[in-house]
Image (cartoon, rainbow, N blue to C red; front, side, top):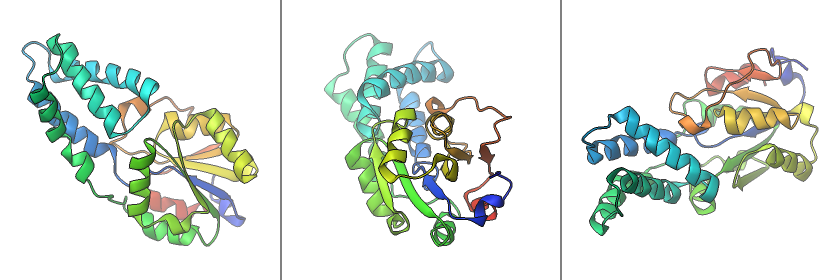
Length: 236
Protein backbone atom coordinates (compact mmCIF):
# COMPACT_ATOMS: atom_id res chain seq x y z
CA UNK A 1 0.00 0.00 0.00
CA UNK A 2 1.41 3.37 -1.00
CA UNK A 3 0.13 6.88 -0.48
CA UNK A 4 0.09 7.86 -4.18
CA UNK A 5 -3.61 7.22 -4.75
CA UNK A 6 -3.80 3.42 -4.53
CA UNK A 7 -5.42 3.50 -1.08
CA UNK A 8 -8.82 3.89 -2.72
CA UNK A 9 -8.63 0.42 -4.31
CA UNK A 10 -9.94 -1.23 -1.17
CA UNK A 11 -11.80 -0.19 1.95
CA UNK A 12 -9.71 1.55 4.57
CA UNK A 13 -10.33 2.81 8.10
CA UNK A 14 -10.22 6.61 8.02
CA UNK A 15 -9.93 8.30 11.42
CA UNK A 16 -10.69 12.01 11.44
CA UNK A 17 -9.60 14.74 13.79
CA UNK A 18 -12.34 17.30 14.43
CA UNK A 19 -11.13 20.77 15.52
CA UNK A 20 -9.35 22.59 12.67
CA UNK A 21 -9.75 19.56 10.39
CA UNK A 22 -13.53 19.21 10.01
CA UNK A 23 -14.33 22.69 11.28
CA UNK A 24 -12.56 25.90 12.26
CA UNK A 25 -11.71 26.14 15.94
CA UNK A 26 -8.40 27.69 16.92
CA UNK A 27 -8.98 30.84 14.88
CA UNK A 28 -11.68 31.78 17.43
CA UNK A 29 -9.20 31.35 20.30
CA UNK A 30 -6.65 33.43 18.39
CA UNK A 31 -9.13 36.28 18.06
CA UNK A 32 -9.73 36.20 21.81
CA UNK A 33 -5.98 36.19 22.45
CA UNK A 34 -5.52 39.21 20.19
CA UNK A 35 -8.21 41.08 22.14
CA UNK A 36 -6.71 39.96 25.45
CA UNK A 37 -3.18 41.14 24.59
CA UNK A 38 -4.52 44.48 23.43
CA UNK A 39 -6.55 44.78 26.64
CA UNK A 40 -3.46 44.00 28.74
CA UNK A 41 -1.61 46.98 27.28
CA UNK A 42 1.63 46.02 29.02
CA UNK A 43 4.02 48.99 29.48
CA UNK A 44 7.28 47.17 28.61
CA UNK A 45 6.60 43.86 26.83
CA UNK A 46 5.60 43.69 23.18
CA UNK A 47 2.96 41.33 21.80
CA UNK A 48 5.44 38.58 20.95
CA UNK A 49 6.83 38.61 24.49
CA UNK A 50 3.35 38.62 25.99
CA UNK A 51 2.33 35.72 23.75
CA UNK A 52 5.39 33.75 24.85
CA UNK A 53 4.32 34.14 28.49
CA UNK A 54 0.79 33.01 27.66
CA UNK A 55 2.06 30.03 25.64
CA UNK A 56 4.15 28.86 28.61
CA UNK A 57 1.14 29.09 30.92
CA UNK A 58 -1.11 27.29 28.44
CA UNK A 59 1.46 24.53 28.01
CA UNK A 60 1.51 23.92 31.76
CA UNK A 61 -2.26 24.13 32.18
CA UNK A 62 -3.12 21.77 29.33
CA UNK A 63 -0.76 19.21 30.83
CA UNK A 64 -2.32 19.59 34.28
CA UNK A 65 -5.96 20.32 33.45
CA UNK A 66 -6.66 19.32 29.84
CA UNK A 67 -8.16 21.34 27.00
CA UNK A 68 -11.13 23.56 26.30
CA UNK A 69 -12.41 27.04 26.97
CA UNK A 70 -12.44 26.70 30.78
CA UNK A 71 -8.74 25.85 30.86
CA UNK A 72 -8.09 28.61 28.34
CA UNK A 73 -9.82 31.20 30.57
CA UNK A 74 -7.77 29.94 33.51
CA UNK A 75 -4.63 30.55 31.46
CA UNK A 76 -5.67 34.09 30.58
CA UNK A 77 -6.28 34.92 34.25
CA UNK A 78 -2.94 33.40 35.30
CA UNK A 79 -1.18 35.34 32.56
CA UNK A 80 -2.69 38.56 33.87
CA UNK A 81 -1.63 37.71 37.42
CA UNK A 82 1.93 36.85 36.42
CA UNK A 83 2.40 40.02 34.41
CA UNK A 84 0.84 42.32 37.03
CA UNK A 85 2.36 40.39 39.95
CA UNK A 86 -0.89 40.28 41.91
CA UNK A 87 -4.18 38.34 41.93
CA UNK A 88 -6.75 39.27 39.32
CA UNK A 89 -9.60 41.38 40.61
CA UNK A 90 -13.24 40.38 40.16
CA UNK A 91 -13.63 43.17 37.63
CA UNK A 92 -10.64 41.90 35.62
CA UNK A 93 -11.98 38.35 35.62
CA UNK A 94 -15.32 39.67 34.36
CA UNK A 95 -13.47 41.54 31.60
CA UNK A 96 -11.71 38.31 30.59
CA UNK A 97 -15.03 36.47 30.56
CA UNK A 98 -16.50 39.12 28.27
CA UNK A 99 -13.51 38.88 25.93
CA UNK A 100 -14.06 35.13 25.67
CA UNK A 101 -17.81 35.25 24.95
CA UNK A 102 -17.00 34.39 21.34
CA UNK A 103 -15.88 30.93 22.46
CA UNK A 104 -19.32 30.16 23.86
CA UNK A 105 -21.29 31.80 21.07
CA UNK A 106 -19.19 30.44 18.20
CA UNK A 107 -21.10 28.28 15.76
CA UNK A 108 -19.52 25.22 14.17
CA UNK A 109 -18.20 26.34 10.78
CA UNK A 110 -17.23 23.40 8.56
CA UNK A 111 -14.03 23.60 6.57
CA UNK A 112 -14.54 23.93 2.79
CA UNK A 113 -15.41 20.66 1.10
CA UNK A 114 -15.86 18.64 4.29
CA UNK A 115 -19.55 17.74 4.01
CA UNK A 116 -19.40 16.63 0.37
CA UNK A 117 -16.13 14.73 0.82
CA UNK A 118 -17.44 12.80 3.81
CA UNK A 119 -20.57 11.89 1.86
CA UNK A 120 -18.37 10.15 -0.71
CA UNK A 121 -15.80 8.71 1.64
CA UNK A 122 -18.44 7.12 3.88
CA UNK A 123 -19.63 5.07 0.91
CA UNK A 124 -16.17 3.64 0.28
CA UNK A 125 -14.50 3.36 3.70
CA UNK A 126 -15.14 2.96 7.41
CA UNK A 127 -14.99 6.34 9.14
CA UNK A 128 -14.17 7.07 12.78
CA UNK A 129 -13.86 10.38 14.58
CA UNK A 130 -11.31 11.08 17.29
CA UNK A 131 -11.20 14.42 19.10
CA UNK A 132 -9.68 15.59 22.35
CA UNK A 133 -10.83 18.15 24.87
CA UNK A 134 -13.51 18.86 27.41
CA UNK A 135 -16.25 16.21 27.13
CA UNK A 136 -19.22 18.60 27.28
CA UNK A 137 -17.67 21.20 25.02
CA UNK A 138 -16.59 18.73 22.35
CA UNK A 139 -19.92 16.90 22.46
CA UNK A 140 -21.71 20.19 21.81
CA UNK A 141 -19.66 20.64 18.63
CA UNK A 142 -20.28 17.06 17.54
CA UNK A 143 -24.02 17.44 18.06
CA UNK A 144 -24.06 20.70 16.10
CA UNK A 145 -21.84 19.69 13.18
CA UNK A 146 -24.38 17.57 11.30
CA UNK A 147 -21.73 15.02 10.34
CA UNK A 148 -22.03 12.25 12.93
CA UNK A 149 -24.12 9.97 10.70
CA UNK A 150 -21.02 9.41 8.56
CA UNK A 151 -19.01 7.84 11.39
CA UNK A 152 -19.13 4.34 12.83
CA UNK A 153 -18.12 5.87 16.17
CA UNK A 154 -16.98 9.21 17.60
CA UNK A 155 -14.61 9.32 20.56
CA UNK A 156 -13.76 12.24 22.83
CA UNK A 157 -10.49 11.67 24.69
CA UNK A 158 -8.41 13.64 27.16
CA UNK A 159 -5.24 13.36 25.08
CA UNK A 160 -4.26 11.97 21.68
CA UNK A 161 -1.02 10.14 22.36
CA UNK A 162 0.39 6.77 21.31
CA UNK A 163 -1.57 4.93 24.01
CA UNK A 164 -4.81 6.49 22.76
CA UNK A 165 -4.21 5.25 19.23
CA UNK A 166 -3.30 1.78 20.48
CA UNK A 167 -6.53 1.76 22.47
CA UNK A 168 -8.48 2.79 19.36
CA UNK A 169 -6.95 -0.09 17.39
CA UNK A 170 -7.99 -2.57 20.08
CA UNK A 171 -11.44 -1.02 20.49
CA UNK A 172 -12.34 -1.36 16.81
CA UNK A 173 -10.14 -4.31 15.88
CA UNK A 174 -8.67 -2.92 12.67
CA UNK A 175 -5.24 -3.49 11.17
CA UNK A 176 -3.07 -0.38 11.66
CA UNK A 177 -1.49 -0.68 8.23
CA UNK A 178 -4.96 -0.32 6.67
CA UNK A 179 -5.89 2.74 8.72
CA UNK A 180 -5.20 6.45 8.32
CA UNK A 181 -5.31 9.24 10.88
CA UNK A 182 -6.35 12.46 9.18
CA UNK A 183 -5.68 15.79 10.84
CA UNK A 184 -3.93 19.14 11.03
CA UNK A 185 -1.84 18.64 14.16
CA UNK A 186 1.63 17.08 13.91
CA UNK A 187 1.75 16.67 17.68
CA UNK A 188 -1.66 15.04 18.23
CA UNK A 189 -2.71 13.59 14.87
CA UNK A 190 0.35 12.58 12.90
CA UNK A 191 3.31 11.67 15.11
CA UNK A 192 1.51 9.52 17.75
CA UNK A 193 -0.57 7.79 15.05
CA UNK A 194 2.57 6.88 13.14
CA UNK A 195 4.21 5.66 16.35
CA UNK A 196 1.21 3.35 16.85
CA UNK A 197 1.64 1.92 13.35
CA UNK A 198 -1.09 3.83 11.51
CA UNK A 199 -0.67 5.75 8.30
CA UNK A 200 -1.47 9.45 8.45
CA UNK A 201 -2.78 12.27 6.30
CA UNK A 202 -1.53 15.75 7.19
CA UNK A 203 -3.80 18.61 6.12
CA UNK A 204 -2.20 21.83 7.41
CA UNK A 205 -4.32 24.63 8.81
CA UNK A 206 -2.67 28.04 9.06
CA UNK A 207 -4.60 28.66 12.29
CA UNK A 208 -3.35 25.52 14.06
CA UNK A 209 -2.55 26.16 17.72
CA UNK A 210 1.17 26.75 18.21
CA UNK A 211 1.30 24.08 20.94
CA UNK A 212 0.13 21.49 18.40
CA UNK A 213 3.05 22.11 16.08
CA UNK A 214 5.98 19.72 15.72
CA UNK A 215 8.49 18.56 13.14
CA UNK A 216 7.46 15.88 10.65
CA UNK A 217 9.92 13.63 8.89
CA UNK A 218 9.81 14.64 5.21
CA UNK A 219 11.04 11.17 4.23
CA UNK A 220 8.25 9.29 6.04
CA UNK A 221 6.40 7.45 3.26
CA UNK A 222 3.54 6.71 5.66
CA UNK A 223 2.45 10.35 5.78
CA UNK A 224 0.38 11.77 2.94
CA UNK A 225 0.41 15.57 2.78
CA UNK A 226 -2.59 17.30 1.25
CA UNK A 227 -3.41 20.96 0.72
CA UNK A 228 -7.15 20.73 1.30
CA UNK A 229 -9.74 18.36 2.76
CA UNK A 230 -11.42 17.68 -0.58
CA UNK A 231 -8.11 16.34 -1.90
CA UNK A 232 -8.82 13.18 0.10
CA UNK A 233 -11.15 12.10 -2.69
CA UNK A 234 -8.21 11.72 -5.08
CA UNK A 235 -6.53 9.21 -2.76
CA UNK A 236 -9.37 7.38 -1.03
